[in-house]
Length: 179
Image (tube, rainbow, N blue to C red; front, side):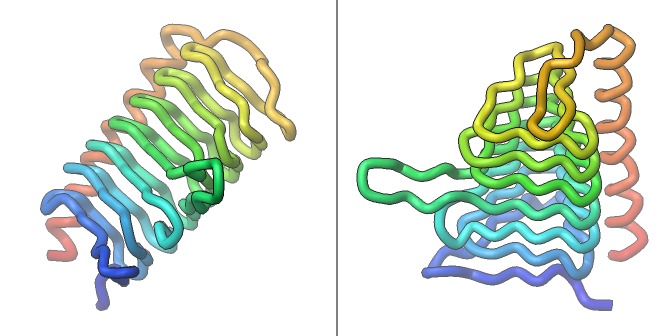
């Protein structure tokens, strides 16, 4: 079994915490940092060849997700992708030049485009398209384009946190099993 594919770009090698889980077959390119106890699952691509990608601690990025960023250009610094701590990103998500604050929750097949911000304890529903919007703390947004649906309940937020901790534990099992 082969491990992840780690590719330096323009002299910058991805930096991955020793206790992070990066599944076999994941591709990580360039100016990427992956924090402690985070997990990057099968089939993901994290490509920081034109700007940077930062991923905090205990965050999980599930199977088939693509993470990229936007190039700087004259008069604009571009859009790095910044993902905080304890973030849950569902299967087959596209994150491009967005900021996901600590404890954000992103549903399966959602798309987050340049300049989008998802605040902590906010949820983007499965299949949503967020194009340069700010999703406030404690809210659920859904649809394409994404629109405010409702405030999250305390039960919703606890469920989001449970999902993140469950992925952290599962990642550690994979690290042990795969060596």
